[in-house]
Length: 140
Image 1: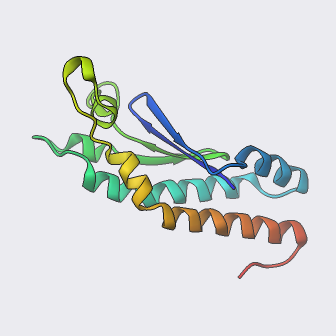
Image 2 (image 1 turned 180 degrees about the vertical axis):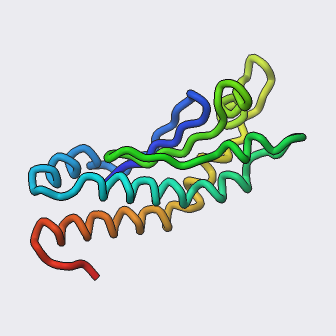
């Protein structure tokens, strides 16, 4: 199965469904289209974005919530929060910063856990479709 990587303003936590690299290599050898995996990874990451935006602290401007977005590679779905210029605090909010008395508020990790049944179904379909493609059948 493919993996999901969650990134918040440079700080990185990874949630991985084991076997992403092996699946990608096997499918590549079998001639499966790797772009399909990227599309599915983005679709799975997108499932987390809405709940993460809802859970993110809103503060005065709501910029943190608005900065949450999905991305993907052939091997991973990615959820990004913040950016270095206008929202550099996404990482400290998500993970905390004890030296500055900032307690962690894990809005992205919580959203990923809450939506796990939805995004794992997307990965199940990706794997089923890939297997069907390898064997020349259609999945249900």
